[in-house]
Image 1 (cartoon, rainbow, N blue to C red):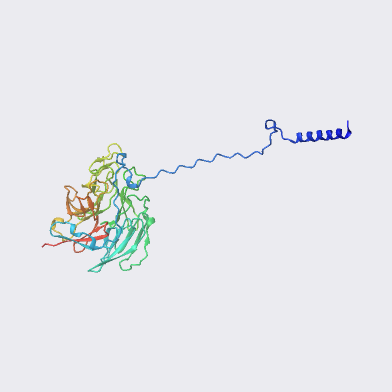
Image 2 (cartoon, rainbow, N blue to C red):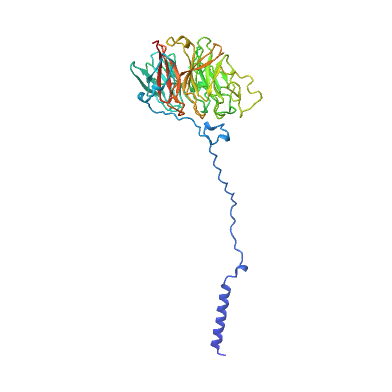
Length: 429
C-alpha cells in the first residue's frame, strides 16, 4: 500500500473521531446543569376588596321595600332672593294681621337673635355663615360675621354673641359696638360630640342664665353609639357646669321657656321611613330635669319603633304635649308675650313647620299656633300663616324656620329657603 495513502487515512480517522466527541449528547442523556438556589418568596397578597359604597345618612333606616323611593331631602336655595321675587301675596293670616318682607339677602338664615342695639344675628346650616343685620329704619343691611364654620347657630346674651358649630364654640364680646372684635374660643369647655348627623344646634339662654343646647341622634334610627347624643344639655355661659336635662330626644330644632312656669318646651322631629303618616313630630314639655322622651324605642304618643326593639318600649317615656304632623319638620318655637296681637295670643306658642321631604304628599310649610294649659294639657293646634306650599301641585316656595319677637310686639319669621325675614304685625282696623 502507498505509505502516503495510509498516513492520510489515519489522519482523516482521527479528525472524524475528534468531531464526534465535541458534539453535545442528546437531551435525554445530557448531564444536569447546576442552578443556584433562589430565596423563597411569599405569595403576593390578593388586592383588598374596595369597601362597599355607603348610602347617604338620610337613607339610613329605609326598608328594602322602599328601595326605589324617590323621596329625598329638599335642596336649600342658598342664593340671594330679592324681595321682588318673593310671592308674599300668597301668604294667608287671620284677619287683622299683616306680613311684609323685613329683610332679605341672607341665604340660608335660620335661628335669629337680637342685641340691645337692635342688630339681629342669624346662623346658617349649609353655608356655614353667621350674619349680622343692621336695621336702618327704612332698610336693613347685612354682613357676614364669620364664615366657613360647620353648621353654626348663634345667640346673643349680655352683649356677647355666642356661636356654636359642630366642632367650635366662639364668643364675640361687645360685637354690636365693635364689629371687628376677635372671638374668644370656648370649644374645649363644651366637650362637643363629633358626629355631624342631627348635630346642628339651636342655642338659647334660659331664665336661669344657663345656655341650653341640643345634641341630636347621629342617625335616622339606631341604638346610640354613645350616650352623649339624643339629649339636651345646659351649661354656664363659659361652658362649665354641664348638665344633661333631657334624654331620648331625637332632633329638637327649637325651644322656648313658658312665660309663667319657666319650663322648657321643645319641638322634636320624628324618624323617617315609617310611611307617610307615622310617626308624627312632637311638641314636648320638660316638667323636671332628667326626663326621657323615648328615642329610639318609642315615638310620638306611643308609636313603637319596628327596628329598635326592647320590652315595654314606651314604659317611663314622657309623651308629648301634642303631635305636630308626620315629617312636618317643626322648627322654632316661641311663646308670644307682646301686647300688639289680640289677647287670645298672649302666652300662646308659635311653631314654624319647615316642611316635609319624607312624605309623598308634602306636609307643613307653615306657621301654627298651639294653645294649652300651663301644664301642657288640652293642647290645640291651629293654622296661623299658610301659603308657602301649593297642595294641588305638591310644591313649595318658602320654608319658615324661626321667630324673634320685637320690642313693639311684632313677630319676625325667618325663611331659610329664601334667605329672608318677614315681619308680622297686627292692627285693629
